Image 1 (tube, rainbow, N blue to C red):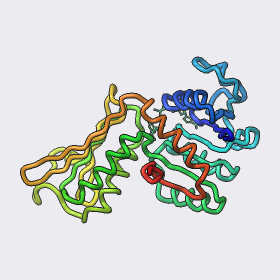
Image 2: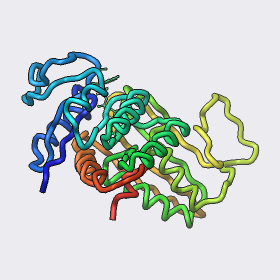
Image 3: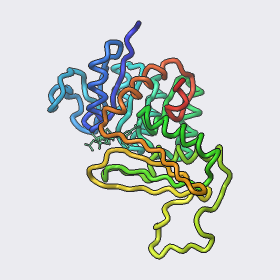
Image 4: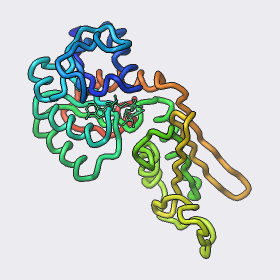
Amino acid sequence: MEKISVVIAGPRGKMGREAVQLIEQSEHLTLAGVIDRKYDQQLLSELDGFSSDVKIYTDPGLCFDETIPDVLVDLTTPETGYLHARTALQHGVRPVIGTTGFTKDELNELKELSKEKKLGTIIAPNFAVGAILMMKFSQMAAKYFSDIEIIEMHHDQKLDAPSGTALKTAEMIREQRSSKKQGHPDEKETIQGARGAEMDGMRVHSVRLPGLVAHQQVMFGGEGQLLTIRHDSHDRKSFMSGVKLCIETVMNLEELVYGVENILD
Ligand code: NAP
């Protein structure tokens, strides 16, 4: 099997460090280079905690031209993730984007570009397979329960709210549930935002606290019963089997896929 050559964007980050380790430990994957906003043209091994001798680039275009990778894995920020994905496709590289919070226009643009270049793109709001199952089970439950509150909980360095996973869960539930205003028809918020964000009458709450990693529970209320479906990522290692699956799968795609649930058997 030919090795898949990968560039990681954001290698100094918590996710990026795990991803560099994943590539180094996987026989059929090889690290071609990394994209960072600092340390241009230095070797990754010059930075604390890294042993790989690949070059660091601040210019993604130059990185793709010089290293000619098969896949870009982006673990930076939503704005940068979008720019990196666009540049990757323009240079014939397949993006696997782990950042979330893209606008509809940005998503559509990447979809078009992916199709035009006949190159796979995977946008993965959540790489954790357990979280994907939580979304799928929630979609199943929504067929029988229409009163739903989604509570997502993340560390306090997270930039976007609600999380991409919460949004995706709500979108999947929406396919099974008609719009319905929840709670008392006359309910009033005495503190603005107390009832959370609203999507088709469903409520979405975002908790941000140090000590949390990535957690979500979906609560379904019915007559005399309550169903709670919950997933916890305690460690960023929980995301890595999904990152590997995306790298392998994107090689065989010719269009953009949004969500790991769409590549699971
Ligand atoms: P983090 O520790 O803050 O790491 C982000 C890294 O990106 C930092 O090293 C940062 O560099 C770098 N960066 C920022 N802007 C950049 C740019 N313009 N060019 C190159 N690098 C840049 O965050 P994290 O926890 O690893 O998360 C990274 C991203 O993955 C976030 O968007 C997060 O929401 C997402 N995430 C996704 C999943 C999933 O399953 N899909 C799971 C967890 C996290 P500086 O240190 O210089 O700022």
